[in-house]
Image (spheres, rainbow, N blue to C red):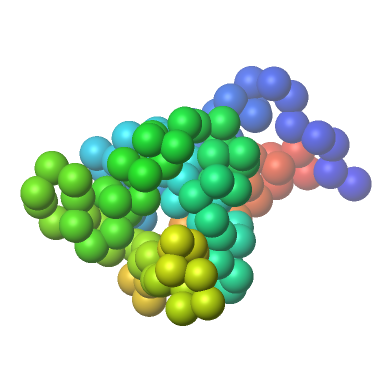
Length: 129
């Protein structure tokens, strides 16, 4: 039976997860972008609204908007975004712009899940030795 990780193991695991995001997605990704990406990935295959992202992450509407733009096709600073998410206009209510993972985002989320699973197994597996 595996014992739960102690607080140092939890910090190591968190550090490794952050490293995984850098390895899989972008080594220069700000933490809030990673936080928003993870919230969108957790909603997949469903879409998620900006206001729900704010509730999940605790970020302001403007921060969510900036991070979704950076994760999308075009960054607000007039440079290409990461292309990990897409917003689509809801034809039944044009004010709504649900956010989805793009194909690239789905691939990145799957790679991230695999990498994190390996890290978690390594941290928890050492208890069996």
